[in-house]
Image (cartoon, rainbow, N blue to C red; front, side, top):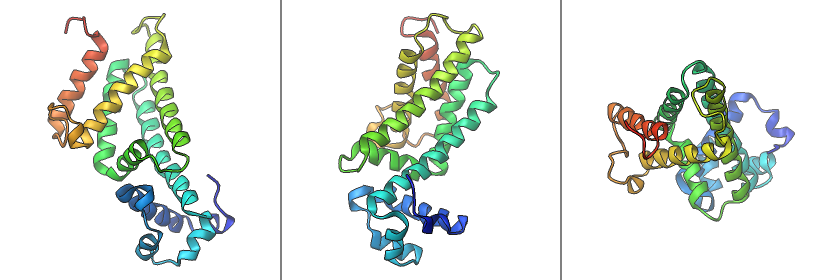
Length: 215
């Protein structure tokens, strides 16, 4: 989402402070209830500046989304590169643990995602969700393709379908770990590190061996 030259000409630390403050506002309240008055009071800037920078509330939200998603993408790209050479299931396990670690360190990022997922009054909602899903798919496909090339996975594996299944399982796991009423009595919500690692390992074993496989 493009911003005005006025915003682009601000010092980078001020740009980040504005976007970080807006991220907190939208993550806490969602789009409809987020208040520009509250945001500018928190930031100590004039309300008119927001309209100079982003045109309107929808423009601000779209830019905050890009800001938040780029943080997640950069984090996961680092995990992907750091784990190259490991077996595919180790890479999946470490990717999930990295996601859990990111949620713990910066829960606002995942809260914003949940707002987009479950609230219907967000502008560009379909496009925002699609961009998240496409990145997740491409990330998993890349891991699976490496697994095929290394001989760990069936060369006839349908990468797109397999990625759909893996991504669906991992997303459900992350949601359950962050939202208490989405935890199906497995102890995922607010689990300690040892318990979280144990559960991630069990999930990856299911993916590796399948429902009829021997563990």
